[in-house]
Structures are given as structure tokens and as C-alpha cells.
Length: 428
Ligand code: HEM
Image (cartoon, rainbow, N blue to C red; front, side):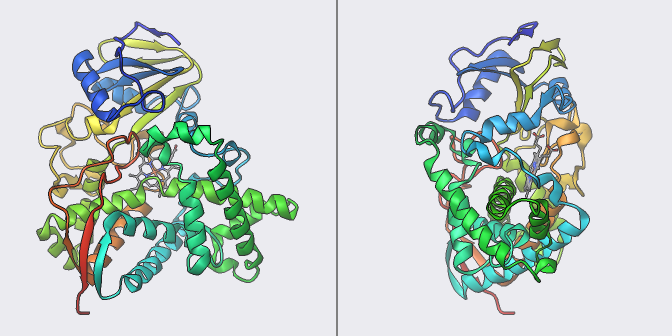
């Protein structure tokens, strides 16, 4: 796994799947301070080439998938948590869910999920922001692709419990826990898959006549229609599982941070309550940018060149090329460490000229792998924040801005502690 010319190696630095690291993002920031913008980390059996230089990050997003694969890098991460069968033979993939009609249907489900959430909350009480938004995420997802009966009642609760056990994001939110998952032979995850299969089977039995209300589930069912009943349900359950866990990787956490940030900025709450949708979207983007803790990775399948500014590196197959959003998003230009929705002009930074290259800052990615769910996610966040602020007075019970889970390296941050909010219904 050669890289020529060879950048400096971060001696004594490992990644949390291989060695205990309290805060991997801080450890890599320290390595960058010592070694400069481009360096190598050898961890376990893997070699990582980290780059943070303007040329390196811009080049990273331009890497061709055939030579430097995001799909393979993601799979190598997520398989630490999910059983292999989840990745084999999928017929409906997360990328395929965000056509114009699909998004309209998902957004109807967002509205329904929000009405159910408002009813569940009642007139007053206390809730954890991230538990609340996670439940909304499950409800929207399962209404969109879980089939009849999946978004309410006992079946919803059972699906949530099983899909939480299958939460692939644990591979990057709690990378330190993956050794225990491997040691268990993924027993809990396999049991959860069996539960999902049973429940998806119940939904399939109820599908005839309900296809119009469940178009996506009907599409998954059609993709497996040529199989015998047992194989069909098993294949559908795996399709739905992969779609659902992908949808739960970032959205509910980003929505949680949007609420946290808004509650810390009462002036913005007033603007949203006055109906300023564009402002709500700018706030959502800004919270997502600041909460990014993503490692962006490409696994080299065939030798590839990467210009990092100081050199053009020839990178051999087997290396993982990576950059970390938390190290560039908040520091690529002065002032980026502050929450400031004004910096967004629609979905772009207003002052992109202040950056050496635009790729140094992002919420949803750049280039060919840009998140296909960005329009849906921003619309969902806008609706959810606006609805909750319209319907409730919310008073944060936390002191000081909450921080992330320190062990996390990937995705939008999860909160390192409970973020309780006291709420009271507003007069309608
Ligand atoms: C606020 C919510 C979200 C954020 C911040 C987010 C962020 C991102 C980012 C940064 C990337 C690019 C990663 C890279 O280049 O390595 C990405 C890609 C992707 N996202 Fe999202 N995402 C969100 C919601 C979702 C949802 C709800 C789904 C639904 C399943 C989804 C599915 C995907 C897929 C399939 C890709 C890969 C696209 C490709 O490889 O071409 N995302 N996302």
C-alpha cells in the first residue's frame, strides 16, 4: 500500500476501531498540527491517507468512483455493525428513493409524523431533543417505506426496537463498541433482522389494495415478486433495513442540532414563528454544517493520483483516502466557528470567495456523491422546526452549548449528553 512520494506518518495515532482513542477527531487534529495538511495513519491492517489542503480536498471530491470508491469505503465501515447479508443482493437502494414524486410522498409523511408527535407530547412536559427527533425520523421513514401498519401502534414500536439494534451508524458513533459486536458474532443484530422480517411479512400480507398509500413499499415488494414467499419477505426486509438505517444516519441528529441552536437564538425562533421558511432552511443548513463530524472516505481499488498542492501523490490500491469535515468546516476561513445563518444564500455559502476552494466547507457533500436526500432533508428539517416552534414554547434545560459524543468519527454529531427541553403547548 505505497503512497509516492510518501507523506509523513502519524506515529502512535490509530483509529478507534483498532485501538482505544478517547477523541479520534481531536487526535487527528493534533496530527495535522504536527505534520501538516497531508499525512498517513497506519491503523490495524489499514493505511489511511488524510488530506486537508485546499488542493487535496478538492481533488478528493473529484476522485473517480471506479478507482477510489465511496461505496466500498462505506461498506468497510458499516459491516463492522451490520451482518453481511444486509449488503448482498439488494434490489432497492437508498439512492433510488428521492425522485420528485417520492419526496412529495415523504414530506406528507413528515407532516403526519409531526401531528402524531404533537399529540404524543400532550400539553406540557419534558423531553430529550435527540430522542424526540429520532422518534420522528423512525416514524417518517417507516411511513415512507415500512409498509401498511409500520408507522403506528405495536408494530411501529417493535420495528423501532429492532432497527435501533441494527443501527449501522453505531459503527462511527461508537466505534469503540465494534470489537464487542464482532466478538458476539452479531447475534443481537441477526435476531433483530429476524424480527424485521416477521414484521415486514405482516405488512406485505396487508399490502393488496393499499399500494397507493405505500408506493415505495409496493416498489420493494414488486422488486421481489418473482421469489417464493419466504425469500421474498427476507429480501424485502433487508432492502427496507438498509434504506432505513441509511436514512437514520444523519437526519434526525441534524434536526436535533437545528432545534438546539434555534432555542439558543430566540430572535431566530421569532422569525420562524412569523413564517420565514427560507430562514428556517438557512438555520437548518448552518446547524448541519457545524454539527458535521463526518469522515469522508474513498477506498482505492486501482492506483490513483491525488494532487495535494505540495505534491502529486500516486496512491496504491488498498489505501483509504480521507478527509474530516470537523477539521475544515469550522476553520477554513475566519468566523466559520460561529452559528450564523446569514452565511447561506439558498443552499450555497454567500461568501464562497473567502475560501481557498469551495470544497473546504460542506453540509451535504460535493461532487458526484453529494447527498441525494439533501432537498428532502432540508424540507423535512424546515417543516419540523417550524411545526414544533409553532405548537410549543420550548425552554432548554441545558447549561452551555452541548458537545458531541467524543468517540464519534463520522456522520452528524450525536449529543454527548441528554438535551432536555421543557415544553408547553402554545394557544392555537
Ligand atoms: C441532514 C441530513 C443528511 C446529511 C447532513 C447528509 C450528508 C451526506 C453527505 C455529506 C454525503 C456525501 C458523503 C461523501 O461524499 O462521502 C451524503 C451522501 C449520501 N446520503 Fe446523505 N445526508 C443526510 C440525509 C440523508 C438521508 C435521509 C438519506 C436517505 C437514505 C441519505 C442518503 C445518502 C446516500 C445514499 C448518499 C450517497 C450518495 C452517493 O454516493 O452518490 N442521506 N449524505
